[in-house]
Amino acid sequence: MPRPRNGRFRRPTLDDAVARYENRIAPLLAPEPKDPAGRRRVASENDTRVSAALGIVPLDTATRDELVPVDGHPDVRVRVYWPDADPAARGADLPILVYFYGGGFTIAGIDWVSWDARFRQRAHDAGIVLVAVDYAHAPEQRYPTQPEQCWSAFEWVRAHATELGGSPWRIAVGGASSGGDLAAAVTLMNRDRANHPIALQILENPALDLTIGHADMAGIAASMPGVIVRTAGRQLVRQYLGDDAGTARLPYASPLLAASHDGLPPALILTSELDPLRGDGEAYARALSDAGVAVTAVRFIGQTHGSLGCTGLIPAADAAHRLLIAELRTLHSADARRVESAR
Image (cartoon, rainbow, N blue to C red; front, side):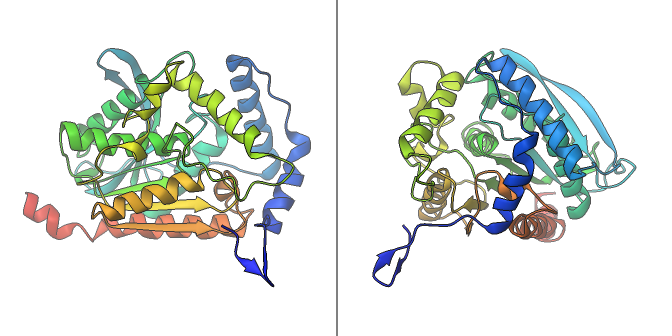
């Protein structure tokens, strides 16, 4: 809730840097059509055009694409990012981050310039192996295809960790928005199916309750009524889950609604004040804490759903990047005793 000032409640305000960024890119954005394939195509073109205008150039670091089989569902492509120009040597024992991009389950992917640049920068700055998962889009593919693809990718990474120059004992999972939903789902699937060690989960503005029951409209501008935001959210959810409303209550669809959060990995959760999904992220942080899971939750004031990805352009995004990198770098040393014990 906004805090009272002089006896009145103050509505949250947009960060000036975010406002300048939005004004800068607005003329570059072509309107997206309503059909899913057309919307996906135009959104990709917008990403390419905006990235070029902003001077976003991905680092020249080593990568390799692999195709991972998924039992009962389409295979999923993953891209391995190494921190330097050459792949890490086998057995280099680097931490690994398995990451799921955000795009409302319907757009985006690892080939988008903005996401590719972000993955390269994070792998380089943290000195880790990052494996980005190009899970399928809805509505062409619907739940449970996406969480099963993400689970298979996680299993593949663990099986090939040493070959990739990483450590099977220093694997983290992470995701943003819809990808945060999938990352949290993978931690539940892992607990239920295999209980492999996961050192950390990183959730950035995650969608975690697809019933839209925890959405927080307190920071939405008066020009964008909450009913419109909720309607748009439900349309995306329907494309992903289908018409059966009960599917949204399944734990691998809405991790926040799982019956138990015991035994999940430590978490870093980032939320933005002006993002309706802030309610999801902060409620999940409380659920994890109540279950005895170590969790750090950070709310960025004046930020929107997408602004924390704009490093080099918005100071708060730079701060979020430094926080994530610092957290990932702890995996280089913090798990050393556990690695030796496990061996």
